[in-house]
Image (tube, rainbow, N blue to C red):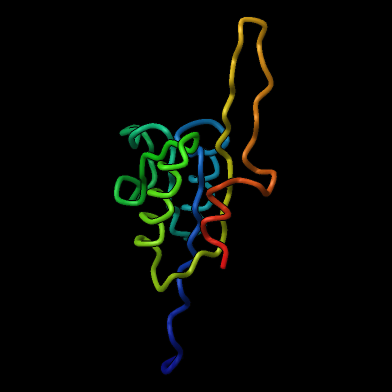
Length: 119
């Protein structure tokens, strides 16, 4: 098969990657050969088992407009050849009051992280 170029490795950006569904999503895509760029409110947890996790993780505060803008710039710098194959908005902001509260999930298409990559 000489002469064929190597297939480009696909890249996924995942918000809310530090635990739960996000953590499982990273493990699944990493095992399938994807490069996963993760972001969460927390530093990269040392117990996370995926390869290249620390260099492909950034701490981003999605509740802050400034944090989102800075995060989009950093993610664009990490993207190889500007290619982003998938974006999973798993991050949530869960405002809790004394009576409890509903969580707002960023996967509804209006997430500021997603809009930072358009056009």
